[in-house]
Length: 168
Picture 1 (cartoon, rainbow, N blue to C red):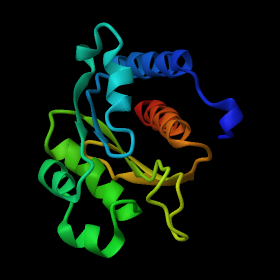
Picture 2: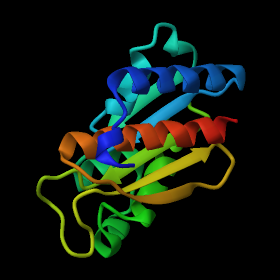
Picture 3: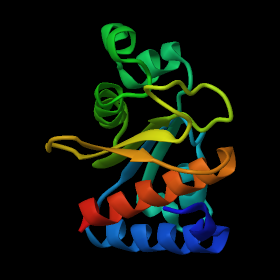
């Protein structure tokens, strides 16, 4: 997504409302596990009146310790692959379902910047994972452009779009 087409707050809110309608129609409860977005997905969801009908909980887990304690990410995964990896986001999204009463979850981990990037994982590298209880997790790698706000805003939009597809 180009930074000149960043989703606005109103667009993110409308997308979150659409996710809520779809989740409620499918009788699904949502959990979020967020690193680089720091709870922004959960904020967009909880801005919607009545969201308690389809939102269970949100966890913002930045540190390795929090990812392990709250989401069950294995220390070996973090050591071998790092926090920003397919393996980590798959364990995060699975852990969100284990530690919650939700039936569907989304997890995000990435490098929002302006620091923290390297040649292998530059600023804007984001992994998003989605999973329905009883199903297999899926993860997708994104490379977003822009400053910290732009990377996070694009991550929220992509996470919500993925939820729309999975809640189908």
